[in-house]
Length: 407
Ligand code: HEM
Image (cartoon, rainbow, N blue to C red; front, side, top):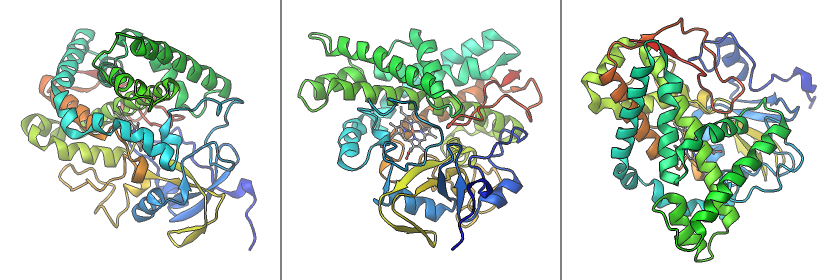
């Protein structure tokens, strides 16, 4: 078999600054990548198999023969790691496999169960209303990202974890670096360390005798660190993961969802008139926008066949959630935004053992935020042309940098 030279392989993720912010891949790119399993070149010059069909993405993500551990040699990295980047990854279970992963994840399962998220809905509602007051006072016009999309998830995750929101500029900037593929590796490394140091100090205060605050970090300190099940460094790593994951994802979903709804004014109005339908709408937004656009990287630890292609042990694979969520075999007229379709089978939260643990929280935040926005700002519209907005193209989590709106 002849092997294509590296430079002849298409680059993933593709660089295309002309694309409309709501289009994950244009028609040309779709043709190039929808293989269903094609070999691509990554920005690190590694190669990987791109997996794009819904059934294949699910097969890949649930197969025990694939690892999510980026410290393994040959892992398909989207950016180079700084020297020392792998030295302190304790607690960051999103990049762990097997028993190590499930031991840590299990400690959080109860925290994010639907019934526990319901209990904090009043807090989410209050946070949303306060952020909307801020938006109202800032304009019109005003930037919806700075005044609404970012503060809501940030305040909620800070409250849940027991992290002071007053420090949000500090960890927002660091969270962003961590998921930016273009950030210089030494900067990433410095920012990881600063985040860990910050949370270490916070955890130590909570672990210290007498201080047992009723927040997630306080509860884990009491129930798991005191009992010897969890090391302080592991708790720090878990808190870093939750702070980043809880911030950037939901904020970007609120921003892009608003843009999409403003392009469909009847849908936006329906949200106000029929808020009972918001759960279905949220699933369709998650499917349609698929903000983890670069996909989920994995390394094969054994030979596995996916989509008729043999992926050999030591080779990388990328599960492309955005294309799986546009698979016509699963979603009729998949490129159409249709809040009345049954979109629940989407894989925007991943699939398998690493499927997003925060999804009940993310869904609740999206529903409450969008319904309240439509109710309080019925005449909301973009203040600029929206085909060319500043976007987070180099981020693992796609989103808008700004969305100027008026009302
Ligand atoms: C994992 C998406 C919100 C915490 C994931 C994964 C995806 C994802 C695709 C799988 C990663 C992989 O398999 O490699 C999203 C989206 C969100 C969102 C689209 C918002 C709309 C949240 C929130 C939290 C959170 C609000 C927590 C507060 C996590 C954690 C994991 C994860 C801890 C790792 C789970 C594991 O490895 O077992 N998320 N997420 N996410 N997410 Fe989310």
